[in-house]
Image (cartoon, rainbow, N blue to C red):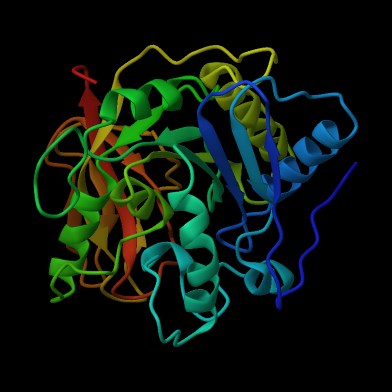
Length: 312
C-alpha cells in the first residue's frame, strides 16, 4: 500500500486539469502531523490518478498529501504551533507554520472547494464539519452554506457538525482573550477567499480504518462535484449537530465523569465531568458530547457540547 512521506523543507502537491470545464477541488492531508489517515489516502488517490485507475473527467483537482511536513515527520500535532488555528499569510513569517501558510494560502484561493482530512483522539464515529450559515456579519461572512452542507453530506460520514468558529470564539473569551486570528484555520481562510470548505474527521488517529474513511470521502467529493466517475458513498440525510458550548480544562486534576466518545448523548442535568474541587460540570440541555480530550492542557478545550439542528 502506498504511504505518505514528507520533507520538512518543502511542500509538494499534484494537480490535474480536465479538458472539460468544471469546479476545482483541493484536498489537504496532515494539517496536523499526527493525523495521518488523510495523508495516506491522498497518496492512494495520487497513485490511482497517475496509473489511470481514477480519471478526472471535468474541472480541476489538487491533492496535498502532507500540509505540515515538520509535524508529520515528528508524528506530532504541530511543528512549532497549530497550523489550523492561525492560517493567515503574513509577509514576515515568524515560525514554521507561518512559512507553510504563505505557500498554501494562494493554493486555497485558487480553488472553489476544500476537503480537509483529519482524525481525532478518542474512539468514535467519523463526522464532517461545516462552518456558519449564510450571513453578512463581520467575523465570518458567508454566502455558500447550502453548497458546503451538500458537500458535507456527500462524504460518507453519518454525522455533520456545524458552527465551529462561533463556539471557538467563546473559548477565547473564557480564557480572557479577545477573538482574533486564533481560530482561523484552513476552512475559515477558504471561506474568506470566496470558496467553501468541509473538514472530515475520519476516526481515531491510530485506527487503520480511518484511511478507508478518508479515501471514501475523497471519492464522495469527486462524485458529488461531478469531477470523476467513482462510486458515491451513502449520503447523510439526518439533522446536523450544532455546537453550543465549549468547556475548558482548568486544572490537571479536572477529570471526565466517564470515557466519553464524540456523539455520546447527554440529557439536561447529566454530569459530564468533575472539577478538581469536586464541582460537577452538568449538561444544561439535551444534546451530545463532541471532541472529548481527557488530557487537554490546562486552559485548552476539554470537550464541546452540541444539540440537534433539524433546520440544517
